[in-house]
Structures are given as C-alpha cells and as structure tokens.
Image 1 (cartoon, rainbow, N blue to C red):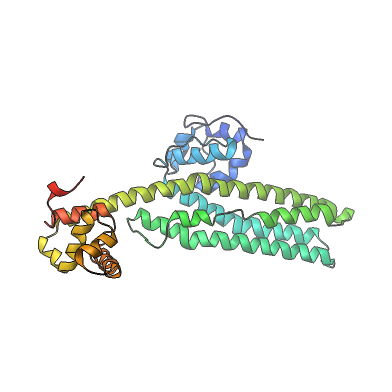
Image 2: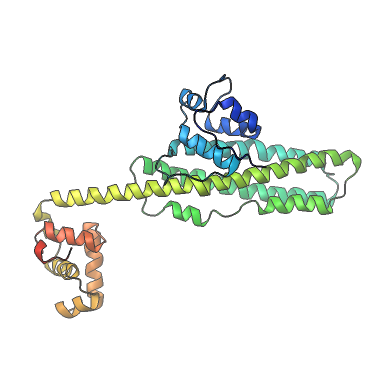
Length: 318
C-alpha cells in the first residue's frame, strides 16, 4: 500500500525510513550509510555526496508514485547510474542466488515437477542477467560517453527504451505454477510459503526498478541527448563560420551548384533538370556533400553557403 506523503529535503531521514522501512535497501544503492542521527534528508545526502533532488525523486516515485518531475534537467545522471548499478549488483549477486537456494531447500529434488520449476527459475534468472548485463555493457557506457562530451551516432537511449519491455513474465509464471500445481507436505510447506513470499517481493521490486528506468532514467538521458545535440550543432556552426573560405575548394564546382540549388529550395528532380544531370547523380552529389561537410540539414547548408559566399544572404528566405 502506497504512502501518499511526499517527502522533502527538510524532512528527517529517520522519519522517512520509519514510515517506509522498505526503502532501507534503496539507501545502500545510493551509497548512503546508516548512523546519520536526526539529520534531514538534505543533510544526509550532502554529507554522503548524493544528489538530494535525484534521491527524493526516486524515493517519492517508489513510495507513492509521485511523477511531477521537471524535464530531467535537474537530475544527477551520475547519481542515477550509481543507483542502477548498485541495484543490479544486489539483484544479480545476492537476490537471485539467495532465492535459488530457498527453492532448492523447499523442493523435493526427486520430484520431476520440482526439477522443472528449478529449470524455469534458471531461465528467468538467465533472462534477467542478460537484460542487466546489456545495460552494464551498452547503456551505461553510452551515458558515460555523453557525460564526457562524446557522441555515438550509432546508438541512442530511444533504442534502449524500445527494447525495455517487461522482463518479469517468467517470475510471474513460476510463482503461479508453485501455487496452483506443486504438491507439498508439511515439511516443505513452510519453506515453500516463505520462498513464495520472497518471489512476490522480487516481482514488486523488479517492476519498481523498471519503472524508475522508464520514468526517470530514460527521460533524463533524453534531456542530456538534446543538450548534447544542441551544443554539437553550435560547435559545428562556429567551426564553419571561422573556417577559411578556401576550404570550400574541397567541394567540386558541381557540388557547389547543387548546394546553391538546394538553398534555393529545389527538389532533386528540379536540380537534375536545372543542371542537366540525372536524379541519381544529384543524390550522389548530396551524399558526397554531406560526407565532406558533415552537414545534413538544409539550414546547415544554407549557413555554409552564406559563409562561403556561394549565395548572398539577401537572396535567402529566412
């Protein structure tokens, strides 16, 4: 059951935990140690080098579903990455092996159905491990590169978002099979019930983890990508404006003609007719222009043409 209170930076950290003991694990994933006395959330976070806004956003979202975030600009990406990596470490290296041991102790190893249940659990664990290792090897390094002003034109966070579906279906199937079909005697029943309780908790944890990624992490990285792209365009334009006009000689005369025609708003067919060449040749010229200049937009080509005196600014419709 969700607590409807929204916690703020000036609330006591001990009060937050007293109201919601299940966030104790989250503290460790943020790198927050216990022993903070009566300090406020802000004081604890500042003492332990955790971004307060990001911590409260994740906690309030997890506790009461609070989603009234800004556009992601205030989130600390390093804090989010630390939280997600620590969550993976906990789940892969502690939680998954721990539940497997519980299942082994609760099931009769001589029962065929019990062996099938263990197989189903191992398939589930493999799927979870594969998903989280993909994030560790691909998504997080991509974000680290963005933070270091490096761009990867072959990947973006939208690619991750599209493939970030539900990964807990096998877990749901597993617990339902145990409840519906697995016979047990008194010896195994208590252990099996305790294991089922942990499976339910894990299902809830995994759903929350996925929602934090979907509703906080992915939007924050989208915002970072937008900022990077804006900065990248500004840098390209700045370099282009400061470029020696003689550099335009790297283009052929025909490629310059194509640029002028594009700036004038002509289609590929109109350019072909105007220059008495084929449409395929126009397309080839455009591809070569983009490769040489690393400019792909009509606006960028217009700026290039003006700066390099291929067209007069007074003749351009702005």
